[in-house]
Image (tube, rainbow over all chains, first blue to last red):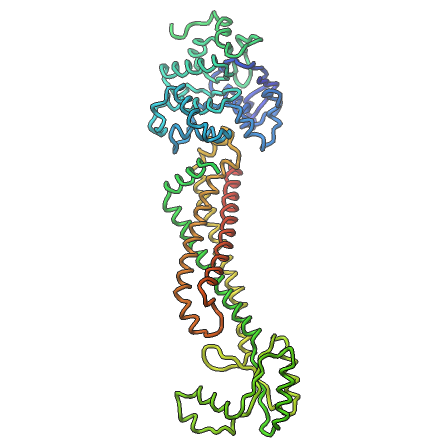
Length: 245
Length: 306
């Protein structure tokens, strides 16, 4: 469903990504790993069309998103759910309103908002925080809001850029469990993280980046079915350690 | 329009009440002045039209003019399509008019006799453009001593030509001066609106960025900003218009009594409200464009800076 082909991106003299290529099948849960500055966020921003590559193409379905006009970018982004390290929730809106805004952006009729929001809040365990403002929530809760917002619009793929970057291990663990559950429902997830324990815990496919180059694609297996990425990949990387042990 | 945009706009207004107040106050002053200028333009135009279409001409007759010649001239004028309402004023009637005009000073009345007042033929022209020809023709007539234009405005008597010249000048000044002043005020309001919207966008930069990343179209991002600008403008229009209406309603009886039969303002309230309705509608349309244009410029500037 997502193909990144020979993508190169530089910022001035700094080469952020060099000749990156990989494919993601529907239903996969893939980690994008590497140290800070490896190019993970740049790659996510390229997929989100927040940046344009210098070379290469990125196909979402059969659409090359690098060739989209400015006008078509919103329609691309409506198909992508994004979870950011710094949450990026609207500070002046309640949790419920944050999700409602996302629904309004994709054009869901107002009559459906309440049921959709309630469902998302229940899924992310935030039902009792619906009328809270972001300033009243913890980091873990804010990240759940971000995830609930991303999920609410039923995206084709979820991009998560270091979603656990600002969270403690326990909160990160429960958030990852949530991502896992969502993947089981059939959602494709591409998560950038440098958190080795999380990668090891799930044992999913890992695309490794280092200094802008792709240095590995562990656990790649074709024929992934909807919602089965997690279990199948766990077998592929069975030699990996259990993060909690 | 989605209620979410209305709610956003209202939240932004509530959170920065002084900015909202400043914008509305400037727009109120602008639209108050625009309303007053519109009324002045209307009044000067109708006054000018009144004098242009109702010029009064007096043909003073020679003392030795025969009654038959005067009657012939009167008939000739009555049959002229350019001329309306011909009436003969005898020397005695002229004296009576004079006495009426100087009734507060009997000494002036006692010093004169009918013989010093010439008899005259008074009439109005259907249009001022005929004045030149009619006067030339009358001056050539053997019974006519001299021809004059007269009109009374408020007090005193003066030549209608000078009155019309003065009215045209005043009307021109009101139109050009008032128009320039209105444009200046509208321009200032647009700038104030731009500054306030830009401030809003700056404080909402994070929100705009998030909305952009989750797929909001420029229209979606702009909507609450446009609604907010529209609320300022419509508040300004309504308050400015209401204040101007109250002032005009208050002044109308005095103005009407001062100008007498000159229709500076409509004498019936319904017509006055009709004029004010047209002004309000025009201002709402102007305000709509002002708000839409202002917010679109501010948003596109903010997006260019991104």
